[in-house]
Length: 276
Image 1: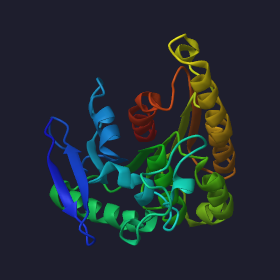
Image 2: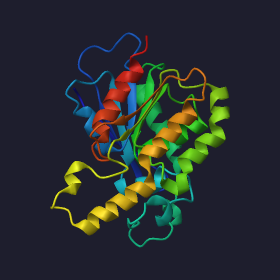
Image 3: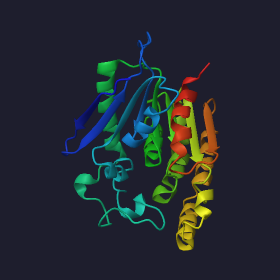
């Protein structure tokens, strides 16, 4: 597999880092299926999958990874209170983002459009099999894309979306726009929505003596308040009300927020492509 890389300069002197992995072998007659995944860390997770890639894989993220706290969420919500959970400190200095950094999801969607235009020019992927994947805040951004431009992609992989963010913004957004989303046209390949089993509680290894009781209690309280499993199931319930939507939602056994992408991203992409 070849893995080209490039940076896309932005008007505010920042940059979008882009990595591409091209599968071995000849390109299909209709072009490669393509998955765009938010964050280079998750790109590497997908790229390392032992089964191999079913198509072109494109990873993108802010040149400064911490900027995802502001780029993947609606503009004006980049401060510490919106970006972090209970018991977790905000960005250095706290407070609200500086004006130059208060970018927001609408701007990042325009960046994604620029990346897609370049990918289309250089690799000409299959226009009917384009997928957007995200984990955590990346999945929240993918939900934003879906509920504002539902036909932008043919399928979506939402791994552990940050349902707690912004006072349960994701649930409010989907409830408000679900009828419009259904009317506009649903993604043809579908939606895969997952969360790790232990994202609302403690994993078995966290009960060991290596973790202090206070830290154990802090983690449990934070995760219970974030309610990732309940929140994912609430989103699945909203999606289930869209007639004709191909939907797969699951709680991933044995997975934490950190390990959930292993069973969410690549399996999700393959599920979307497995359309009779």
